[in-house]
Image 1 (cartoon, rainbow, N blue to C red):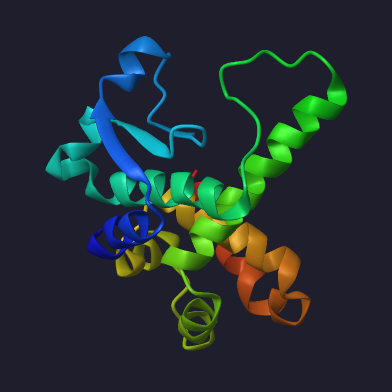
Image 2: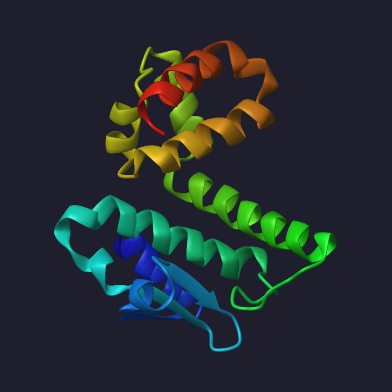
Length: 161
């Protein structure tokens, strides 16, 4: 967590904890580029939410790194704008999963027989959903490693999601 907070300081991004989820239907994190602020729901400060806290904060930092330009609170009714939102969300998540789960380290673990999504997520200090997304991105990006990635994804679909 310290490395994420240090990165936010280096990027001059303020982190503010607020009852975000109470106001915006369960929302846990939001990056406001105009304010250079990441808003996080105060429930993430509970010890039991440590891994979730890391993942949400990292994904919100991913928006800053990858250049989010759209507002979460506007309603976009045309297909092109909705697609752009999805692309920005995916770009931020790809960055975040790589930051917390470096591909080289994950591939090494997979090659050495670590094939349990829950164990991998604990090893990297992430949620199982976050690990599942990393495995999905890895499966797309590392076609030559699909033989070791796909069995973990199949098992993860039963246990992680």
